[in-house]
Image 1 (cartoon, rainbow, N blue to C red):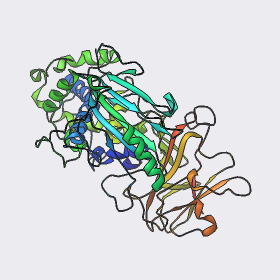
Image 2: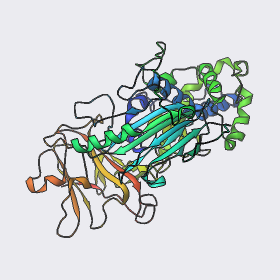
Image 3: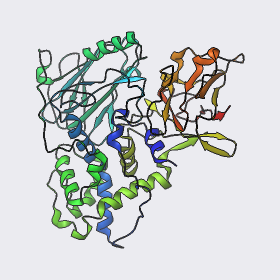
Image 4: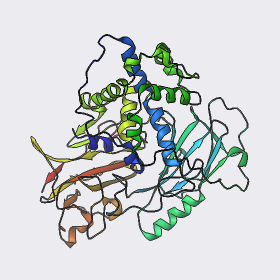
Length: 478
């Protein structure tokens, strides 16, 4: 299975696809036992995997917020970052961009004081504002599915905080001080709809609790020149030795504590110097382990991906998972999703089936623009969602494909035509299928390409992709 396909199948934030970059040889490096029967070594590997989300989230936070003012996909702590338009085919900064939702995001530190997020009345427009804690768990998801589309305000409070919440504001208790708000608002990409969504983004407010109800402007961010803004976050994490890694992990756990369910695992880590609320005691870690732990631990994460399939299903050539966002004590799966799909939603909010090959009978071959393909949805069997669905076209590098329609994805908003029997064909090819079929045409490049389906708010009752009662149809050569 292709690693990049799995990365997007896990539904990570396209906004941050570049910071979730993986080493090219991640699956090829051998897993070897440098210290056979050394229990402490494997305990340290477990601790590394356990802490991987928290360390990665912190480095991500540093990179995204290390600017003076919001610009592009970055913004200081406590500032709302507003992506204003979809990229076109010339955009190469971020892989797997989407042409369905505009991101409205922020990082906040709720350890010292709660922050209040206010969302305007979305007036029947689909949106969601998932909130991730420092361990990458989606602990709350205000949005049309869960809280409706009326105006709403939420006080995000940190661990141990007690106080009074203003009237009309709902408290959301974060398990950690680090909180990443990853809002998405549906937009059809027309000038008129861009303007409407921009107005909604501008009405979103984020203020510390002490400033709620007051005229408040977020202060400029302070740029730290020592923060590496060029190296991918994944590489920054992977190049740490064990002492540097565990030192940062222990520092972060002082304000981003483990959950009660983690107690059994965390108690074991004390034997190698990792105790929540305390500095890392490196004297308890064998010096011979320091340089070897990160590589072995990362390979173990990737072996979960390679051999247990990372809990990714393959249905008719489409790969996807329904195990994201909430992990419990599934530390290996949590680390894997962090590594290749940072920012993943709960499956009830979004699933991202991805396909690299057409599947006809016993054979599966990579998509190529020299061929023509069709995916047929039988009558009444378009993707069952309550939010929206789409199929996005990417070239083999996960970038949009230039085409005469400037159409990068296809969905119900194209006013799809149906066949006499009620079925719906989507034509996937390089050249136009004819003027009478262009409403159902997803333009492809002349060479290799990749398809990704987005299913936001999938139905939770049959037919549903969540329980397998709705099956994605295969993409076949025409």
